Length: 112
Image (cartoon, rainbow, N blue to C red; front, top):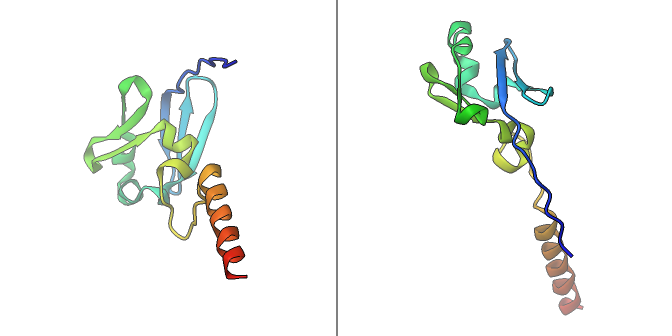
């Protein structure tokens, strides 16, 4: 029997940037802070340009017109699903990892 779980998307209600962090306040009370180096356009932006943001899609994303940057709240909450970060090796999903492990075992078994 399947159970349907209704999920609601977190929305950005406030955004701020320090010299090294992007901080987003969500409508459910959480605050998410991520390194500003994840977003080179924001890193290079002036403090005034960083302050000039607008919510897009009712808060599912954030847009900075002056630096042509768009960031989704989902990407901040689960960066491993949306971004390739420098010097970071992202693990495959659990299903892909199981398939890869099975393939390696089969390959070893056939070699003897």
